[in-house]
Length: 130
Ligand code: THU
Picture 1 (spheres, rainbow, N blue to C red):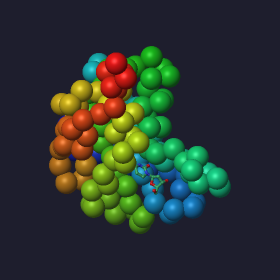
Picture 2: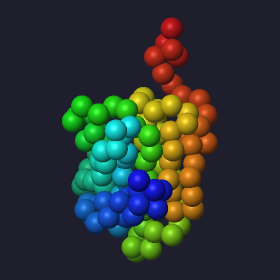
Picture 3: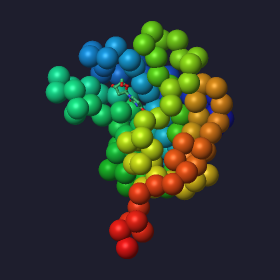
């Protein structure tokens, strides 16, 4: 799957965004090592802090289905269906991704390809507690 196809899947995933409070739709498309695709969207709540980001929705869907080996995620976010501006992943989602993905994990945004290490060069891990 090309980066363009993966990004298009993220844009499609944003169709299901439940974002009545922020008005900001986000979609994510997570690719497993064996080529399976998990899509996710942001899901907001009247109790704002319970909101789940699109990336974590995709990761939790995949892990709950038995997939933990990932190669890339595409993220698309927009207040108005124009997904040309890059939507950077939040810190919470980076931490969750880092539980399963190494520094080379690819993050595809509207302006190109990044690596997990570009956004999260160091992370809290079980080693931090030793
Ligand atoms: N959001 C995501 O889905 N992913 C991110 O990485 C950052 C923010 C969502 C959460 C909320 O529904 C909306 O964008 C505005 O913060």
